[in-house]
Image 1: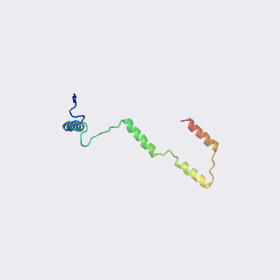
Image 2: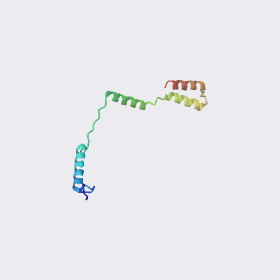
Image 3: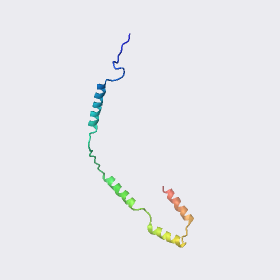
Image 4: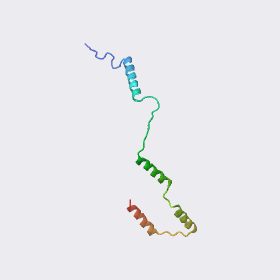
Length: 98
């Protein structure tokens, strides 16, 4: 003797599937309404200051243009003299400061 518990043998009835899909769509529509979303953003005073500092840093490269021009001129004239000891000492000082 065999007793069948699931009358649909693992396949839900079509009406139940459709009803579940409608319920899911209705829930999703309520959670995410259609149409444009009006998002706003308010920056703190610190964030505004950070933006200004960042803008200023980008505007100024930190390169001494007059010194670069002078060095180029000396190089072009063959008059530039480098001091390897001074360069090495400056690099070591810079690395020690990090």
